[in-house]
Amino acid sequence: MTIAEFLDPEHWMNPANGPLYVQLRKRIETGIGSGFLAPDMPLPPEREIAAITDLSRVTVRKAIAELVDRGLIVQKQGSGSFVAPARPRVEQSLSRLTSFSEDMARRGFRSEMDWLERGLFLPSPEEVQVLGLAPADQVARLARLRRADGRPMAIERASLPPDILPNPLAVSQSLYEVLEQSGLRPVRAVQKISAINLGAADAELLGVAPMAAGLRIERVSYLPDGRVVEFTRSLYRGDAYDFVAEMRIPEV
Image 1: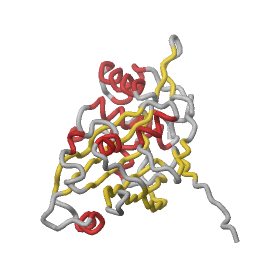
Image 2: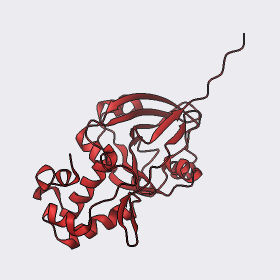
Image 3: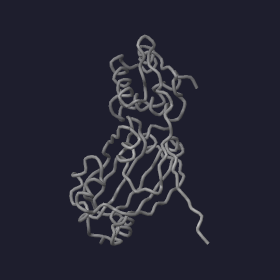
Image 4: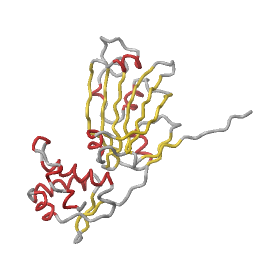
């Protein structure tokens, strides 16, 4: 497939899917995430992209500008726009209970997020069981798309009992910082990791092709007294993360 065929609007443009510059940005993000638009690869000039997509130069320029802001595209004076160089994979330790914000700050990355859901809701049967709620109780939910230096990295969906997090709107960045201020930060967790193929909606959020490899992590976190404080289901890009666990041989 050529770039012109990839950008052909018949494959992705839909008036019902929001602003055209956002659709173009997401199309290019998908090409980068799937590897079709490889690191350091030049993009066609804006006028050529406009001709291929039948969009205005202003619309194309706005889409490219957002990709530059997210660190996915770099612009070189006199040379044009290029896919950003390949970034190193993130190694995530499975032996430390830290937040995404803390992990990214420790690695020198700028942590960003887009809110997908935040508030108090009726719990699902799974949330009732894991968090020890009654069916008539409410549950605090936080769903976020997490970015590092503009690059989509993970989708996090956290559920907490309402007495642990009575006001989900109080979380602006780090959930664990808010819990720590209340003396309710978890001290241990059990995690389950599964390999998956990302569905279309999640893949679009993460900027990869549908059915791309991903990692699903379910985590149940506990307070010192053993109470469940957090139930989190996260989806990670398979091309961005390596999870590392330290193992010891038991003494005999």
